[in-house]
Image 1: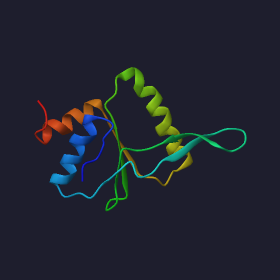
Image 2 (image 1 turned 90 degrees about the horizontal axis):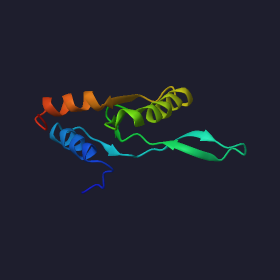
Image 3 (image 1 turned 180 degrees about the vertical axis):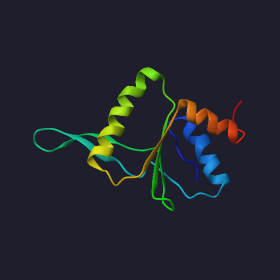
Image 4 (image 1 turned 135 degrees about the horizontal axis):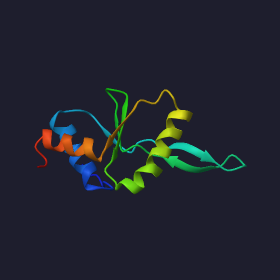
Length: 106
């Protein structure tokens, strides 16, 4: 089934997971991380992938450095409010190394 990925990096990562027959779900959960005074959710964080067999969420952060600060804040809030959520973040350099290792890049 074809997924509508938000970024090409997510599609590439899904291909690696498929190749190694790792079950994955794309953006299956959105975690509330900010609320207004009335208790309504005003911000959520949605990790890119969930690997159910490993109980692991994966977030790919291949954004420009100036945008990473905002993403890091969301990740910090996720860890603060949901300490039992197992999350691995791949930053740009990590992700590029992964692509090279598995034959998807230079």
